[in-house]
Image (cartoon, rainbow, N blue to C red; front, side, top):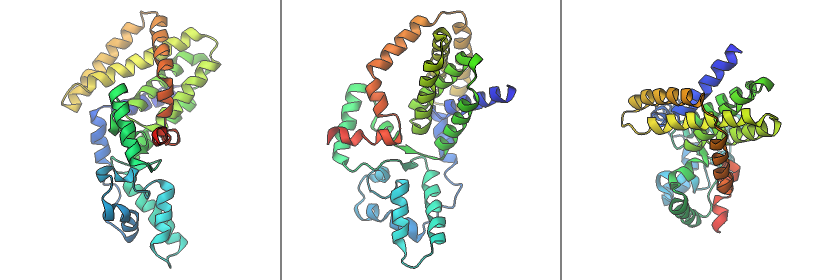
Amino acid sequence: MYLIKKLRQAALGLAGLLSVPFGKKVEKSLSNIFDDKTTIYDEQIDKFYNETHVGGFTHRHFDGSHTPLQMWEKVKETLPNDTNVEELKNYFLSLFKDLQTPMGIPLHNIDNKEGFEKFAAYMSENFAIKKSWLLDIQSVNLSEVFGATLGVVALMFGWKKHEKEEFAELASSLILAGAVSANPFLLIVSIVSWAKSYTKNKHKKEFKQGTVKGLLGMGSFILTASLFASPLLGIIIGLVVLVLVKKSLKKLDVTEVYNWFRSQFKKHGTVLSALGGGAIAGLISGYII
């Protein structure tokens, strides 16, 4: 029980940190784990961009070379006489070199760039969703993989019949953190876990209590921590606000708040589902073709 509690705290803490400006510093700090010296395989993967410069610094989403499957095809094309072992080794080396960067690797290639630009403009105008978020939700980097893995483990070991409220709080917190940080893996897994918790929980009041506590707790931390120019100061003040919010929620019946959240989720459910992760987010460009 103690280990599960600490695991939950670690998953929530990491998810929260990666959702605020401090998270960008973490991503940058991971960018030199692997030697990024360019190899002939890297040159083949980046060949299209080096010749056309289509997409600029976001070219990985548009050049047809950087998704995991496309990258493997490019590696195989590089040399005619290299062995399967050499190809496999250099594939993972190139993959991890891209994965360690803040931009990460795309899970879906956007074939219609003009269509995507129109869609991004529409989402920005009507839903205040930035183009950078739309690209980020379709990609994953090393910190997001680690954060999602820890979140998945916490959700797996946190499923107890007598802890429905705590589980709903964990899942809803990770949903919000995954959405804000545009972590597709964490967002999908936490949404599925939260939905499963709802269908399995006969005591809906506990589920509602946990959901609201998770959303308001994580939301208060992310909002507060993002207001300060100093990431460290933002995190400290954010934690103080989080503690105060959690204490206040213990004294309240949050049913009405939950019903409001539920109505908003239903209202924008189609959009949220479409942007929920790599494979689903791949439909983005298809909406406007």
